Image (cartoon, rainbow over all chains, first blue to last red; front, side, top):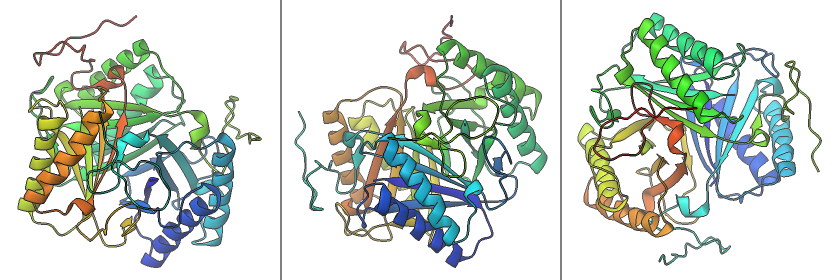
Length: 138
Length: 138
Length: 138
């Protein structure tokens, strides 16, 4: 974790999508306490009429470059850290691939560690170092 | 918010999808305390074999017009409001685009306001009027 | 419920996807207290560059057969039951369609029963038997 679903209208180049993915992850590393190799994302490209968003509700004006990030986290973060992450994310995406801050929307959902299995049918017990320790369950 | 993922089998016309999107949003405005311009949805069209649902478990019989709504909300609603929304939604979808109530499934997930950034890397502070106020974080 | 989103790279045969779907559901029946007809899944096939995952973070090595399961549950389960489910799932998927345990990642999100309407705009009141009882709301 985190796992992030990225939603946008179809039509961007592979280079654009890579820059989007890379800078999203960079914002997570810099400001959201995410290790560099903790990278799990999916990119959903929607056809016209399949991604519907109001142009001015609580922000915008939103354009067809609108991008929506849904992030599932396993470890809690403070409100201050979230705010810092949102700010850094829009900064980096403006640099590359050149997305206006008005076009960036983010929603975070949290779930506890026992609700996550990264691999091999085990639950990570939280001990740093990257190894997977199987937690014995009652 | 709310943000809603709409899932159904591929093959409906653009007019059908628009009516589905419009009447879903109308139900939210009428019964779920959602402002008219607070509209954020994605429509996922699945090929045969990619959307799997039991025809009679706890309802149905479900047909190939089955539609699944996953709604993420930021503001809490009462159980009574949710029940009223579910009822109104199936009424409106039966009118247009003509979906049977048996074919409508809904799941709501909640997340707190600090977990949402609508635009510009800021968190909405809850003051009505549509303007985005940046909340200063500790 | 549960409702499960299954994400993987495009290119598998319909038989592979059916085996994946069937054995996922079998693990739920055997170890996760799910009735046999309580089956609701979506399968998202991603093109190259659209499903991004680190090969070795907390497990792996992950290959292009990586599959990610996001499960939304309405009824709570114990940590012990979750661990048993993760173990059984990787066992069954190794049997068919032949997915390595290193390639299996699972995230569970929970939501309360009033947040779910299976059909007909009503909330299931929890009485076994498969009938849908409408719960009168205040």
